[in-house]
Image (cartoon, rainbow, N blue to C red; front, side):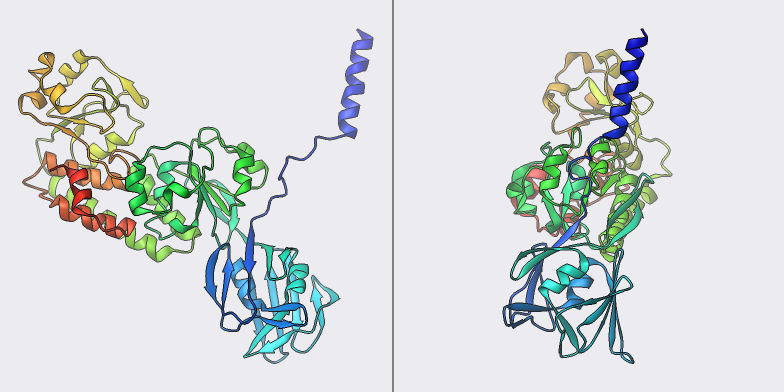
Length: 457
């Protein structure tokens, strides 16, 4: 026994001398990738084209680049002191002071030497080599390089403190519904990878987003693959609040959790993303539009005395939505009464006898439901159910996704359902509303073929 404990102590001592190796990519820092061209006023940052007011200059074999453009695209700060003819730059923990017509700089309080800056049209140009050396980057070629981005603090929709780049250009989405939240913000071009889980109609998604089918898989929110995510060098990963993110966070990748399992969560996530992506105006416009539709429905139906009872079927007639799923909120925001809202959990199996007992006024089938309107109406056991007697059985519309999924189209689902339940009070022109919605949220003009797919002939 003494020998056994001695071996344990020796093993513990070895571990203390040789600590665990750092995780692969543990020092990951989001970077901006730049590409410039001599004499060209166009440059690229993370493959996005931007304009310069002063073009780069080739001096000997060195390319000189306007330093302000680089610093601002990284999210750093740069200021000019006309009295001293000096420039001060701050990028994360790096502070640099430069002077016009001087090759001496102060880097984090210490003197250093660089190639003599070039002053052109009021802009200071530094050599590519010096820019990379000063700010701790990597030279890729004679006209391209990578530099770390300025990081800032934020809080995601779950209240987690996160550190993200001030300028976000590369987003990996691990959750399908989170992907769609980038569209009202006009940030869909930032998507570099999407989830392996395909819940959208990819043909329709490709109409709205032509690049959809060519965007690579970024792994799944259920089991995210860190190595796969690192390949895309993301500025940000977005996913839902249930994603196991421990390994992603450990390697230093910024992750924002989005609470999108409710309508209020969707709206909150749009506002949050608009803030950290630098598109608050787009977020505000989208929220004003979406809330105007919800408020209109509420104003027309909240005082009604006889609220319609609704049963929502998911994969089959006897599978319904428990209290944690958005379908109950879609019914509630339509001012219907979900007969299954008190059931605990997500997808819940019920019996035909329970449906008979609920006696709903309306039965709504998800578009992915195995049962059809006809099979429900012709079911001999259900003939005394109000929804069947009055032929109030409908299939929820879909386009990119089903309108009962937790994404922006769920607002259209609420509009559609309120129109079904209370046509005299709400009275939406759903064709016009759909056209307006997809233009406002996805910047897409619906065709007549699209409308037929959504609403039927």
